[in-house]
Image 1 (spheres, one colour):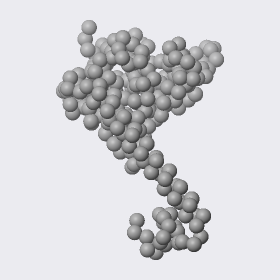
Image 2 (cartoon, rainbow, N blue to C red):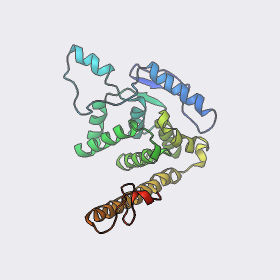
Image 3 (cartoon, rainbow, N blue to C red):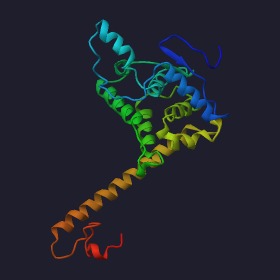
Image 4 (cartoon, rainbow, N blue to C red):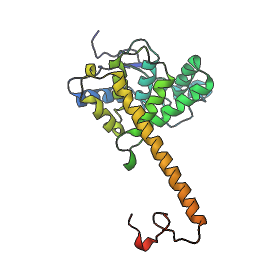
Length: 239
């Protein structure tokens, strides 16, 4: 069987990224194949309420309610013994139902919500290096049993998800290194390190908020309207 072969109408077969070669050409091929098969490019609907079945809604569910091809890839490969580059166009409800078979309803809900966050993720100025993406992926990795996947498969999952242009900084970290030279520890070290950094930043923000509240209550010392610090005014602010 060739690396690239069309299967049934419910699935798309694509070439697998091996860690070497032209990554951009590979990602373009995957994207065009997914688009040709009607994979949507966003998740923007209620994942836990399928439409009632009738001749009209049945057709609607089968087309408009398909998940993002990348999200389907993450889940199908995480729940499968073999990673072969096959994308199944599952509806959002089918994904939730599949997770519910293996986990509690609450856990399935949590995972689906994290998947929404992951694939609706957008880069913003304070997150240009993909911190939130890695934290979200690490959450899924802990919740979904990925122990059956090899290192190459884990890298493929990350690269497939990073086909979204907003994930390019994440993709770049892994696409320049041959898959065989990256370990699972290398991959998830990013997630835990960045998670710790985000936690530390949150603690700093919380401490600053406490200082601001204390300053507001202190009427004997000037409070800067620019940085909210006590002891100077906006006219002499250095920040």
